[in-house]
Amino acid sequence: MNMKSLTIAEAKAILSPLGIALTKTDGEFKVRVVGSPAGHGYFTTEIDDAVATGRHMAANSQRAVLEQRPTSAERANLIPA
Image 1 (cartoon, rainbow, N blue to C red):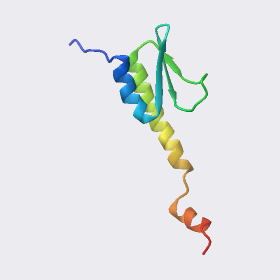
Image 2 (image 1 turned 135 degrees about the vertical axis):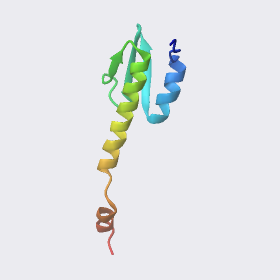
Image 3 (image 1 turned 180 degrees about the vertical axis):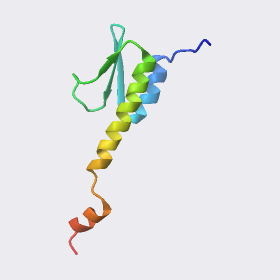
């Protein structure tokens, strides 16, 4: 089976709405969470690997945000009666 590989534009269109940045330099793709330090990221030569890793990073990033949010019970205690 001959599968067409994604273009960088297609990969960016997939990852950008997830808050993931994708860049390509010197034949390597760099995937990182938007807002993370520029030196942090995942490097790969395969665009499909970059997209899969970016999706995984987005899921982990979203999970971290959700874990930091106060629950409704915690929010109720923060608001004075």
